Image (cartoon, rainbow, N blue to C red; front, top):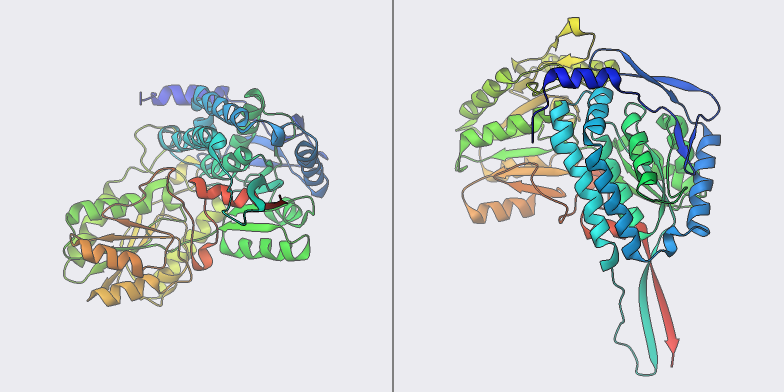
Amino acid sequence: MTVVPYEEWLRRAKLLEPIGTHLIDGADEAGGGSTYPAISPRDGQLLAEVADAGPAEVDAAVAAARRAFDHGPWPRLAPAERGRILIRLADLLEERRPELALTVSLEMGKPVTDAHDIELRAVIGTFRWYGQLADKLTGEVPHTAPDALALVTREPAGVVGAVVPWNFPLTLAGWKIAPALAAGCTVVLKPSEHAPLSAALLGRAALAAGMPPGVLNVVNGDGPVAGRALGLHPGVDVLAFTGSTAVGRHFLHHSADSNLKRVWLELGGKSPNIVLPDAPDLEKAAATAAWGIFFNQGEMCTAPSRLLVHSSVAEQVTEAVVAHARALRVGDPLDPATEMGALAGEDHLERVLGHIRTAVDDGARLRTGGSRTLTGSGGVYLEPTVFDRVAPDGALAREEVFGPVLSVLTFEDLAEAVALANATEYGLAAGVWTSDLSTAHRVARALRAGTVWVNCYEEGDLTVPFGGMKQSGNGRDKSAHALEKYTELKTTWIQL
């Protein structure tokens, strides 16, 4: 990628005109006039006044999606035509990549180079991949009695409510929206109230790509009001959510209290990263552990926040991780030299600092970091933080911090490592570092996690599913398996 100079990003930021309206039935809507301020965690400055949805706006968006599904062309288009529109959307996102990356960086604090090179690459690839898959879905013709013909077809499930968080606002929206649209569903997207501006650009790009009005609607607002209204709405057939386990429980209650809509949840994580003494490269393991916990300011549900290291190499690995943490450049997200940007907001920073204070009180040893930094910037910045001597039953080892805070725990043998790794209510992801192929397979099978990385972390592509076990959720994003969430199986039996 060509590096855009710092001065150019600053110039573009001054020219940016964020969109703060809803998108309902193909039109910009201010709703009832209520707004809230979108504040950049980069410097505390106001980005836009954003329309704040209540039940009326959610109802209008669901009604538009229902009309588009029940009477509009989208579910009735040839799958290849739906695919072409999704691919055209991917092309438009590529054309508008700098504006989208800048918007993501300003609204949630991600380094703009990460937004441009990683997040936008992911969302563009997602729409392109599902666009290419759209006409390759097939039904079944079971081998049944000679005097009958049975057909099993996949049909779009209907109106999908997609509620996504702020940490990867476009990527996670794409993981929900693209397979739902490819299947022929219509969508109401509710982005996080902390990152509504990039979702607005995504919705307008979909219209420009040729998506009919009402197929993709975007409503802004917070979870307790707009999210709740979407979860309770009887016109929503499927609700797909990425976020905290606590909020996921609310959506299950909303389903039970309304129309028993299917609810698919990708929730929190407390992912273990196991380093065995026979790891092929301990320095690489340490560098990857540091990258994994500090990338995106640690605001990742898959972040390897628990580093489990064999006692014989624990100090060596920990010292290497600490060295990487101290060398990391925290700074302005618009500076291409920045490696870790701003946290999402003041409230979130205070929550993370609360976890740090609790860890100190519990007796964990602070090896580096632990304090707010760049206090004169007006933004929300935290030092990369590493604790060791973390008690397995302490809060830092059990609770999701969702910030750049690593806990190091030690073990003596493989059985203890697996027990520590599984001693959590979560089951989203895990890592293991070993040179022994048999050990890799045995540990991967024993770990209760939806994804296990061996001698790497956060690797993969759209061909593989992503999701959690236990209280990390259900269902899968990515891959062809994601289409299972947005389709219904229908059996047609014809007596010959």
